[in-house]
Every structure is written in structure tokens, then in C-alpha cells.
Length: 431
Image (cartoon, rainbow, N blue to C red; front, side):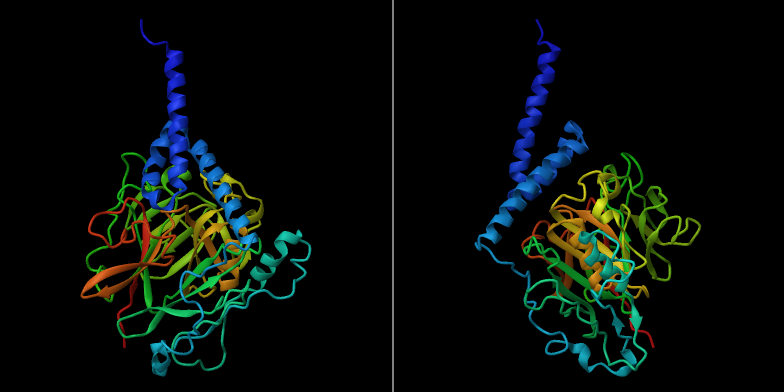
């Protein structure tokens, strides 16, 4: 006599629960994140996307409670991922000696100011962020600018030494600063929730987008190579790379690279577009960015975080429907985002562990983002590496040495990466 089908179903459920518990345990251990990441997709097929997301959210909530208890008890202190105490206008800045011919305008991005009449009517929890958004306007200086490329420091949220001070981070082959970085502490309830911000000068760099070898795409649909092209993967040219958006099943957000469209665009979604001449824009598809325009690449991911200098109210009230079918805005996890200054000349990347949506949005606004959008979230997926040359070879260095220590070379290795990503190259000097 065969085993009753009811028993077979029960056994499947029991095995699924056991597998889920093992997954959560492994996911909670940093050294096992690659294994946990590989287990996530099979579990999604077995239990469904939403159930696995709920399991992951429970784990993140437990981790957050433990972290908050440790910091409240004085058992841990916020720790910056790098030495953030140096002032970029002093030692270590080759750009200080550049000639005036290479100077670019100083851009001013003021942080929080007294509340305007537009902000005072909002709930208390939204006032600070909205004041930041309303006052964050890119204002080129009318006076002659000093040599080199500089950014005004960001007003600190917390008490970390060096918070908001832009440090030289990435140089081109001529020793010119093309990217700065700083650390921000935007969540007063979670002093350990640090946001790293990287700012690229798009006058000196180019942004590129690559489809992954598997994502984002429908099963059996079009996909990309998952590789940086050989002509760009050169010492001194390839400067950095960072993650793209969600996998297809977490929203089926559109993407295109050089005419390859694995997923079609959807109106109303935040979209980063790259034009054939290298211009980069972020806006709402169907309103700011139109289908009939000429693009070399574009990528969508959820709704805008910041739009025309204002934080989207759904940052505070949205659900997983707005921000992707994996976690709602209340999930405390590693998040990443991207933004542009008002003149579209400064590209910002943001990432940090233990983040809610509001602190991430407030950090973006304070740094100078005029239009910005969410990228991927979750450990192992949100990843940024600077790329430097060492003995003629490319070496990837993660922005967060501890939180981004899995598959550090994912964007520069010789075999394809499964998910989509962006990379940054140095512009050739023109006369």
C-alpha cells in the first residue's frame, strides 16, 4: 500500500520548515552567507517569495534587537568602516595641486535648515527629512572656484569623528580625485546603522550598466554577459563597480543594456538612464524619462526615494508593494541606493547595514541627492568595490570590509556574475 498523499504533503511541509530554520540559522552567521544565499532561491520556489521574505524579516528583527541591546548596555560602540577622521582638503589629496584648467565648479548641498511652511504641517517623524529635502538644492558657486574638484561637507547627524567630511577615495591615472566618500549616522535609535556615501564626478568618470548572466530576466528570456567588457576592464580605466536592482521575481522591474530588454519598462517607476553621450539621469519612467528617447541603458527599481529634491512620503508609509516584494519598509537590513545632484554631474552611491528606509532617504537628501532610487538590499546583494591596479592586475576593495566581504571580486573576476551591476570608468583626458 502506498503512502497516503496527505502524509506526503505533511512531510514536504515538515522538510520545508526544517530547511527554513537551517536557512535562517545560516543566514544569521556572516561566514555562511554565501551558503544561505544559494539556499534562498530553492526555498522561494518551495515556500513562495513572501513566506521566505517573512522568515528573513524575522531574523533581521532579532538581529536588530540584539544590536540595540548591546549598544544600549554600552557593550558596543559605533565603528566606522575606515579612518574617517582625515580632512580631504589637507594631506593625501593630489587634486590640490591641479591647474585651474582642470577645475570643476564647487557644488553646494546644504543639509537641514529651519522648517519651511511646507514641512511644518507634516507629522513629527517626517519633519527633519522633509526639511532636508526642501533645502537640498544644487547651487553652483557664482565666484571663481578653487582648483580641483571639491564637495562641501555634510552636516553630521550624530557624533562620529569625521562624519560628513568628504575624503578623497578614488583617483584616476593622473592622480586627480574623481570620487569622495564619507560616513553618516542618520538613525538616532540605531547608532550602529551607518551609511557610507560615495560621490563620483561625472565630468571625469563614466557610468555603465551590465545585465547579469541570469538576472533580471524571465526564465528562458534574454540576459546579458555579466562581465565588464575587456576594453573597460583595464588598470587605470576601471575605477569601481556596484550592485544593480532586485532580481526579477521581486518586482519584475524593467532593464535594458545596448538594446537587450529582458524586462520591459513600467510607468511610474524610478529609473536610472544612461544616454549614448554618457549623460546620466534618474527620474520617473513615463514622466521624466520617456520611452521614445535614445538610451544606451536603463534600469528600474521600485518607486523614487527622492524626486526633485523632496523625499517621497511613501518612504514613511509604503509597503512591500511599493518597495519590492521581498521586504517592507520596516525591515532592518543592508540597503543600497543611488542618486544624482540637481545638475546631474555628481553620482552618489549609498549603502549601510541595519537600515530602515527613512534614515537611508534622509542620508541621501543631506548628502545632496536631487533625484534618487533604491537599489538592491540584503547581505551578499548590496555590494560596492573600488578597483585599483596592483602589479598590473585589478584588485577589488569593498566599501565595507566586514559587511561586504562575500564575493569581493564578483565584478572583476573572469567568469560571469549572475546579477546586473553598474561600473565606473575614468574619462580620457581631452584638450
